[in-house]
Image (cartoon, rainbow, N blue to C red):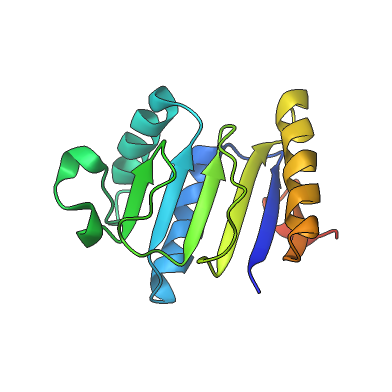
Length: 149
């Protein structure tokens, strides 16, 4: 059964939260796909993942960076998974109705954006109807995650 996780960002922006989640993903030996709802954000994330911390290296790439099947973290605006990833991160309005084939589907959404919250509710309902194990995580003021549902 696919796990679907919803991360409600309130106290830190996506470009601070996503790198740590991707690091944990790679530490577990998993590959990931990051699917963005728009090309501009995809390009910004590509840069942010190279520069988010001086003492870290987070290997990733886009279709422009060579064989996508070789990328531990593949960034895209499409629904492809060329690297055989077991986890997909959906950001900035990216959605899915395909849960099979993934161990985890992770929605990261801005808690200050009413449209993003509405989209997350629709995706929550779709994941529940598909029989997925769904959890909701909310960020504390200290930046930690609390399971709320």
